[in-house]
Image (cartoon, rainbow, N blue to C red; front, side, top):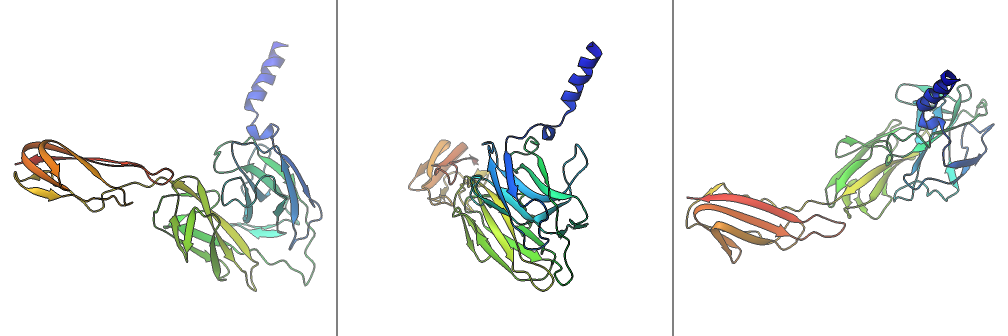
Length: 318
């Protein structure tokens, strides 16, 4: 009996989180005999955990105990209350799988392969498998004269860094950034900002907040060789860093000399200077004597935009 209990205990410890019951309850239709082209599956979710959003993907079924690795990223949805998400959890979610899709290395025919809907936590809860669910789908075979076009593929970068729903980028308040993308089909692309926290002018992004998230969408209208697709590029926002611009102070200064000081930070905040040791500040200038001087520059933070400035310069008067 002790041996049996021990075996059961070990088995429970080795059970992956994905094998345990997920909190999110999934309902959707149709899940069988789905059209290979132009299908829409209406999904409702109940009990979505508050600690993170979800991704809904079309994937090939993986081996028992493994996560799906072959997925149709171009139809992926981000379900979250965060700005830039495809849907919020309480929406009727419109999911548009395709009868076939191509990854970078593999072409999948879902009328032959075992495909389905794979649902998991999003990038805000990395490594947590507790919401992993796989819902099988079956597809109608494409009929002659009605062959589904492959979904176009978009590759995108922001400031030269590859970005996708699996790999968000972090930008700070007012940090200059450029989005660049190409479509496999060669079709033209259009760009849109999905949240007011990020302004978009052409392909130039300007974060207008230092907290939260925003997202940029890139859309291919498709052409004779590929069908249309939209990809979402999530951006995490961080507080901006205040600086004194190009101002630089040498480590030594001539006794009796004076140095003019900038009055504002890069974000326009008034700078307050404090001098200790062999120096003094008056009328936006620092005067040096012989000896060691410490010059401190401070400026206030702005809530949700940038952090406070607190910089010290150490100079020796000679």
